Length: 291
Image (cartoon, rainbow, N blue to C red; front, side, top):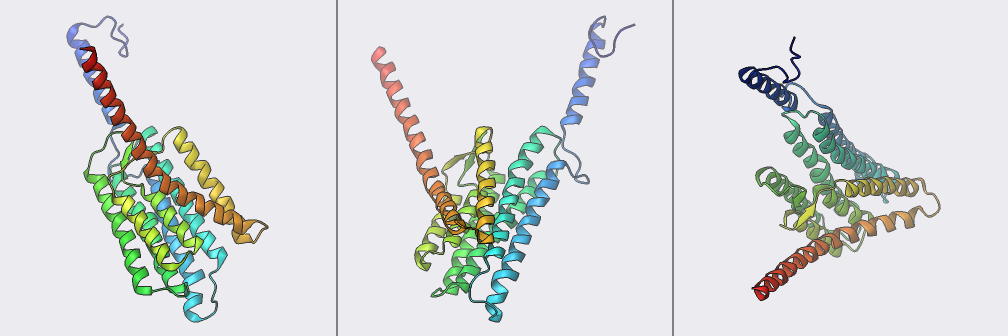
């Protein structure tokens, strides 16, 4: 008797038919699930959206409403830290949903859900942070802060649309990734710099998100470093919110490090591309001399 899982003892037609059935089975296993079913990665994506909404809710109830009702003139550190922590957890969900989707079976809704969740957590939420900062910060301009907040939101919308429409080389993002841009915007707000310079820095982050600068995707060692950075940031925020000794310096150091990373990343990417072009020119010159 011939083993159906092997090709031993089969004639040419039977072997072709078995290969065809194996190929169809493998294609079915790899194919995304129907839109009626959610995959494990989709639940992580939905967790990202939930974190974005809860961050907005935390800032509204803990910072904006007390300011508008006159109950408090200073932002509640606990509410602010909770909101930022929620967005960091959302960034972790965004980091892992792609990894899980590549390892396990994805769904047909995956890409659409990911864009919508990113819009909430990394578009609406940071823009809302900027708008609230313009309301509660002394010597601020609400109209100007609302305009910059709108700029942040539109930059994320354009970037997500471009991500869906433009095919890039594997392992590359075009423009600053939304999670990095959102965390940088929030880091600027947490530092509470002078109002106009702070808005100019936020506008610069919005520009980097819609720029054509190529950023590497967080994979392998870079993904591990990103996860470690998120965990350390959550710890610093917890120490700051709890009023522990050294909490304020830790928060400031973390925020400055985030802004520095965002500023250095495009410079390092540009330097690498320039180095590659210089290397190509030198290689062509060497070939021409050899000829």
